[in-house]
Length: 309
Ligand code: CP
Ligand code: NVA
Image 1 (cartoon, rainbow, N blue to C red):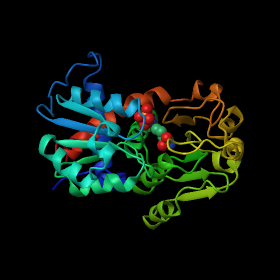
Image 2: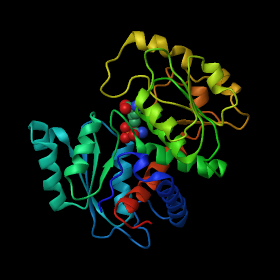
Image 3: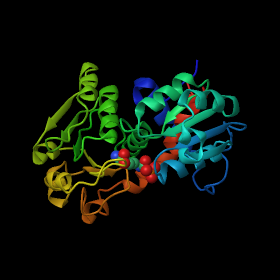
Image 4: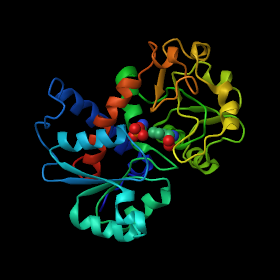
């Protein structure tokens, strides 16, 4: 059976834990090696990943490319605008053709349904490298970062401030799968998808949606935010103004637990969703978080290609 990774639930709690353990162990095992050196066991030797980008990327693009190199495999990176996909070839036909050439496909797209359709018509695993709905690879890296710094992910309280977006959806999903509460502070009109919250609650997830940023952050173990304007969204002064009370500044961080940490998937808009003193401050884990995209995605690739579990 082909294992795709469109959302965290595709792997379930057991699959996520397996991947996190693999990511931590594989990161340790290659400490000190040059970044381009192949892991000793080269588990994906002979394998190729195709990547399709319909949107900009720095981290996802480079970390997946380096992940495949370190696993002993190779990549083909394509912007959809230069593919026939960009002039109307269907996603189904693209899936069928690429399945004849490569061993796995990663897609970054504005339309989650395209990733679903790609997986449905491909004979090889498809990985979600960000859609308008979710960003599961990012949250694998976030979970690894928390595991490394806190020793566990279960039971720690997350506080999200800002826009109810794709990154938040994957955090909510992770909380319901792994057992941690997620408190969300969003201004009215910018809530996360109600269906995502309902799905998480049906799974037993502890999710609170509030208009009060102070209440959301109080006692939190992890404070997290993201850009107020995601890729594909129009820049709107009205939205920025509504978001301002949800900015993560030192006063907000001061209401979190004394050993609380700060996460941001990047790219950041300093002075908007977060101030320099927090993102560059002692509680910020953003550079480990960005590095862990590489390690976590290696585990995702191995899981998808049947090398784990
Ligand atoms: N965090 C993240 O996905 O970054 P990129 O948009 O640079 O890939
Ligand atoms: N929410 C952001 C995440 C970028 C990595 C976006 O979709 O643009």
